[in-house]
Image (tube, rainbow, N blue to C red; front, side, top):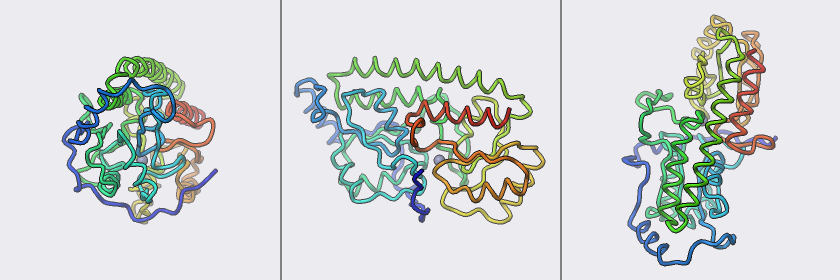
Length: 318
Ligand SMILES: [Zn+2]
């Protein structure tokens, strides 16, 4: 399995661009929209597909499900890559410059995209922020004071809202194909509801007292909240930063006290720290969960990520 490059300094752009709306339409976006309305309907040839750029492979898969063969989707962070410590390269800036639609999560997961957009002089390209200002959702706190945890997409129910946002964004860029986007979004949402029911059924086979989770980074709180799992702790406070000795000692204490059976890590992170936690606590290590990035087969779609993780959790905790 390919490993990502070593973690580098985290790009801090939290204050760079204030998100006031999930879907931001600039002047150039409106002009592109006007141009679209006078062009012939989108054919299925590769050359006429809508170029969409997403920050991660997970969102790229969601866009492909909604856009079908009308879209040509590129993810900036590669499979098995770490979105939290990603640094865009010149090729990424060129991809953003060519895009007709940009899709990101927001809430601090991938805010480096703002700088890439400004480097690409693409401030007018429609930008969909999947997780920002979603209706009816109580956000959980992030690792730094005043921030929110961005990993809403680990709950398939919230992904239905992501799908609505993606469909709106595609319809803005290509209104002639609105019906197809709506149909594809609806059938994808039907699958997501089935996925949610399946996860619920799987987790119900784990005794309630054993539904306790320790992960490498804090990607699972929304999944845990949805399916009745307790997060006992996370190995790192933030990806790319080594935890302090005091933090790790407190976590080891919490793992022992809670009697956690297994500690999970994710494929994009080094296993050394969780191996140390396991050695200190006697818990087993399951080092191949997926969350922020797709991986190699069979974990090549968002639905596969949720199925895979659920299978690993249930097998280790039951
Ligand atoms: Zn993450």
